[in-house]
Length: 427
Image (cartoon, rainbow, N blue to C red; front, side, top):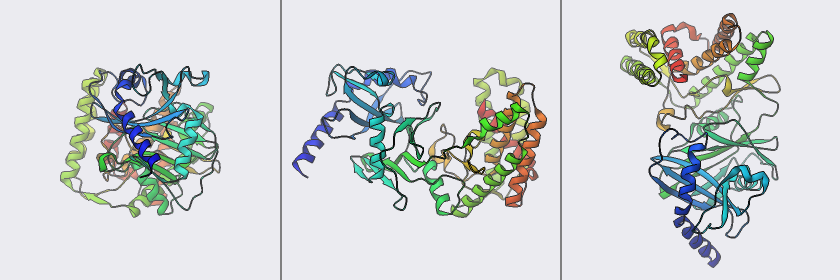
């Protein structure tokens, strides 16, 4: 190791040992973040998992990457370090001012709001390599533009995203765990299979603290400029009284293409009667837990449970299961500038353990999510527009069947169970 590298290593270790002075301000800041899963309860144990300086010591601004264990959940933090006070544009990103330790007298702030530090992330992704526990990688066959201005994507909840120019979007996962994230795994598998319905990752980064299984930390994908969010598009069409069945039909075909490509690219299985019964039992347990948390649901609990009882009684055998999107709804779809549909955000339900999200499941789970979205849209309209929802639901299923040869409505017991489970999840 060179003398400079050795000095930098010692300084990084010294600073890692000095994370303690940041803890009080992080305890106060974390519960206010939309992506923090521990809202509503006090923070107990806080422990650094790994740290890495993304800029040489003495850089202004500095940038610290931190994986932080908070009561058993691991969070990814990107912290900017500057002399105080912060420039006015960065003032809303302030986390605090350490009173002691290596950052004493400095301002610590959320780094993704700083265009200079956001640009550094893109450069790291353009030039693969390792930095402490971090590893940056990319598709060698896809060039990545340099010097693009970054802007944060507002309105997110479970993650944070940066848009670079009009070319790329970087999703930064906040709550992370060991194992490849489906939002990297599935789009890469689809790209290798030649499916163009999902933007193919061009770069990504991960960490392997302590030499364990890597944690996926971020994914860079093409930004589909000029696209319409499927949920907002549906609401606009509904509000103007315009027909949406042709779009719903096309979305059904796109969803079926993605499912078919995933089934070809990754392992599949068939659920036996015992597995189907366990599936129904899990849905029943979620309903009971939700009813305990939401008293307004209790008068409907028995009726909702009937959908799961019917699934258990069906003794369904041979139900195909495969890798799926896992949290599909209209807000996870984009109609691109050329009028085609794309599916995005393959992370699955973030509250579920990563291992659960990577298990094969019936594709009807995704279908149920879209069908529920049509109902939600219709009920958000005044007056309620049930005929609009029914026509969109039928068109979607017909489009799906046109690609796969099987209409999802041909298995009403399974479809009703998944639609009911999705409604309970939304509650």
